[in-house]
Amino acid sequence: MQAHKLTDQLSVSPQIALEDISKLSALGYKSVICNRPDKESDDQPAMLEIETAVKEAGLIWLHQPVISGNITDQNVEDFSKLIETLPKPIFAFCRTGTRCSILWALSQANKMSVDDILDTAAEAGYNLNGQQARLETLAQK
Image (cartoon, rainbow, N blue to C red; front, side):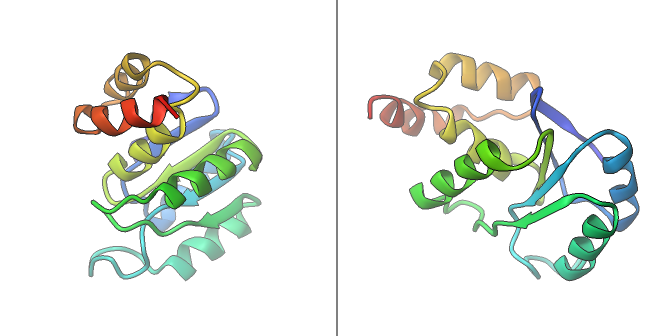
């Protein structure tokens, strides 16, 4: 498991395994968001198995499937509401962590400068420069 801290309240990660879930609880996470559709690839664990293990570990589970390369404004709005309302800290994962990072970045466009968003993502290991134009557009709204 590779947790990449975006904020004190949100970390993102590539796909987790069932054995990682007890570590999440031990690390103090309160909520888990999965942004990966079930059966997106043959090598991923079934979401029902992950969900069951997360709940058995006493964590809040939220499955918000988002199609890679097709993040909609509604996806961003939904993710924003989740990170505002779920118990923190939150652990979010997808195939590589990039999708979660993009959702976070776009949800922050009217709260942080574009440069700060891109720098924060880069410090966590995610190059989101390809999102700069969309971030700038959202920041103007």
